[in-house]
Length: 297
Image (cartoon, rainbow, N blue to C red):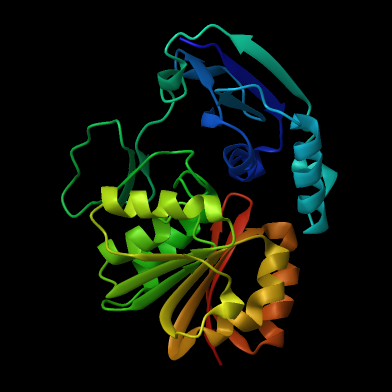
C-alpha cells in the first residue's frame, strides 16, 4: 500500500469547515479531523482544537501557493488575519496503516435538535421515535451538520418551513439542507453552488438518503423560479452582496434563512436586510454565530 501524507494546519476553529473544503477542492484529500480531544476522569486533558489535520493520498503540489491564493480570497471577502488564524503547517509522510479509516474514528452521531440527527454513513444507528436521520460522509463538502452555521439553518427548517414548501438552498455545499427539507415535508428541493466539485457529492448524498433533489452549478442571480423557503449559508459579505437576488427568489409569503454570520459581522448583514426592505422574523444564536429568518415587508 502506498504511503500517505498527514498535513496539520493551524487555523481559527470557527472556519474549520471552510478550510476543510479548500483541501477537498484542491488536493487529493480523503478525509479530515477537525478536532481531537482526550479525557481522563471526565475532564479534558488535551485538545487539537485550532489544528486541522488532513489526510492526503499524494504529495500536494503547489501547496503554499494554493493556500495563499485561498487565504487572499477569504481576506477579500472580509476575513481578518485574526479570524483566519496563522495557517502555519507541517506535512509528514506516513506509512499506510489503513489511514483511510483513521480519520473516521473521531466522528460520531451529531444531534442537532431532539428531532434531527446526522449520522456518518459507516455507523449503525437506531433512531429515536420521530427522529429524522440524515446519513452523510462528514468532510465531503461544506455542510457536514457539525458546524454551527449549518445547524442554525437546520433548526430554522424545523421551526419555520411549512409542509409542502418549495425549497431552495443557495450555496448548498454537501446538500444537507435540501435533504433535511424534504424529510421535513418540502414538496420539492433545489440546491445550487458555484463550486462544481460539490455537485456530484450532493447527488450522491441525496441518493444515500433516498431524497429526490435537483442540484446545479449556478448562482442566485441566474435563478428565475420562486420559492416558499430559501436557505443561504454563506459568508456575511457575500450575503450582503446578493441580498437582492435572494429576495427575488421568494414568493410573496416566502421566508429566507441567512447564516454564516459571525456575531461581530452582523451589522453588514443587517444593513443589507434593511436596504432591501426585508423584515426579521427571528434571530438565531449558536456560540459566536448568528442567523436570521427574514421575509418581505
